[in-house]
Length: 414
Ligand SMILES: *Cc1c(COP(=O)(O)O)cnc(C)c1O
Image (cartoon, rainbow, N blue to C red; front, side):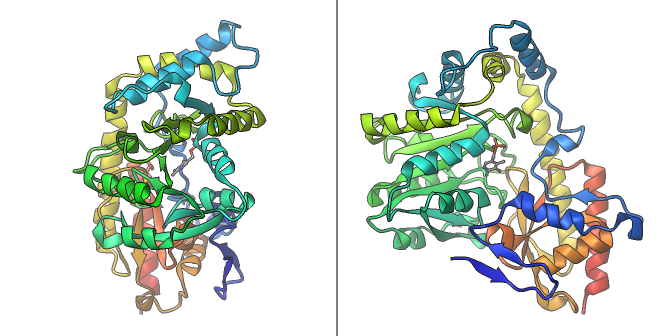
């Protein structure tokens, strides 16, 4: 399953199950030449918006953590599934968008969404099992599955159909050893937001296949286009759903490492004693996030004002618009779909219009060297000759970076 991409640039990147975004961005960063070209490095690659002051956590969240720490009540271990008040706060938060009330016992507190991914895949792995993953997707899934000897099978997201799941391809990939399908909504890396109808069709397909839907909703509510965010848990009566999320993106505190794994399953297969016991045991292995951060969650959820979320969404709308407009001005790239959610989107590279660039990886390395702009090559998320652009960037830096991309493309055009 491991493909080597020979780029002729001396940069061998492995795909798709053995790479991380951080790994590739590190290589690109090392290839910049700010001294040589006199340009300060701008990254449109990182998924950490906190690098910019316009994406700053609320003081309400920070005070909640300080209060929890100062109370000296949370210096000990928490239950490995999470503090009861934290599970309750997340259950209540998520229940606001569901047609039923989520019991706190169905919420497991994790060290960010990343640990929720690792727990989910680890407890689902068994000899011979496979999992269906989106392409393009989020590389941690492939990497984690590979560590757990869980075979990855990739179905396409359709760029000209709003990055919807190719449902028949998904269905054709599945067999009796398939355990789950992963759906990321709002989408990273595509910036799409699925309709209620499409999510329902995914759940119906999963039901037919007898598999679990793993719903990565780490960008939940970060939607600014026509489609509102609908949680997959709404369809927990159709198919068993495991919802993964965290404070990282919506609350702009990725370093706090506070996430959750939730079973949304009204028919009970995820409530079987065997499954719950496995899940709890795996939580025992992981140990969970810092107790005082967990203890701050009820106040964070309670005290964060709607205006804070609105500001983030307005900024993301503005920066995604800047990207979309600017991409239109650059001849060798095109965007099939205006971003509607999350913090990143995909842009197609027309290699035939560039005279001395062999592929997306070559493009990104030369761009880093000549322009000190970091962009993630599409291969890193499973799509060769595409680019993933993060727009959780300050508007002025974003405009400058895209201007540099434009002049880079002009310089290298045929
Ligand atoms: C950022 C991200 C994660 C990881 O979230 P953390 O809470 O930082 O661990 C998981 N899935 C997707 C799609 C992401 O973009």
